[in-house]
Image 1 (cartoon, rainbow, N blue to C red):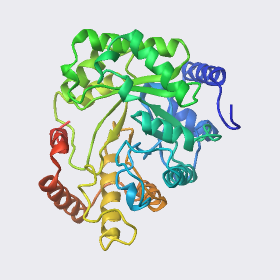
Image 2 (image 1 turned 60 degrees about the vertical axis):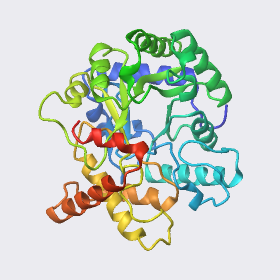
Image 3 (image 1 turned 180 degrees about the vertical axis):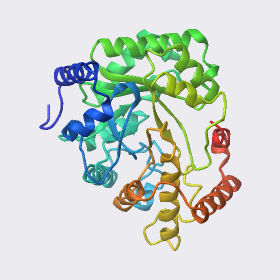
Length: 360
């Protein structure tokens, strides 16, 4: 155990104490207002939002696990998105610097959705696990792979993943399902929920949820398994808006589910530049990123967007967005709309599914 790490016994104790306090009649928001020391890695310049019935208070913008375009920061790194050689010295240095700057900014959650991401971020958090919550999904050992579609196999995969990452527990096990999760038979979903429940009971994970891109099926899972589903991880971008009726957010609010929004920048299609600090479009891209974050945060049912970030400047930029006026004025709204229209026209084939998330 490294200095600053939290033992499984400690987090079970702390979770019980927090639950007792809330049962005594304190709302999570009120409790946080009364004692900011209970907010992990609190920074007065960062906003914090309640992550549904977990009662965790997480920063209004968090760190997504992907590192797209990181080769602009680490030129000889071979890999993009969520894969690559995480042992690469320059890459490890980059991830350590990003996590450090997030901690400085008061960002207190990082989401990892593959084996490579978990290994990279568990390494970057070594010795300072008490500063950030870790969202955990080793998707290669989850229902996207046919051999991991029973509770027994999922729990075995979790044990293997925790051991390889040298972790005693995960803060949030958010199992990654097929993008169209409705393709999973009902019995697979039932086995998945059973695995989440058993992992919590065993003290291997603190909280549970899942990731999917299938809006109707996500709503069904929240309504069908309200006890097991505490958090969902789904797309939510700068064109997304709530449906006036039969919205996913109806279920999210009714069952008090936390929500992390992935792809806030439409897989970087929002930007004109290539994310290099000296790009001619860098200043405008920074502005568009802040507009997108501000737009997304106008929906209080979205706990936090989780953009992938590749340099300290990007961390500072999204943190700045949290401090800026929330509602966009007419000129800003038009600029963002025009940029997203351009993004839609240039959206790669693999990301056409984001268009299904305009009405949520």
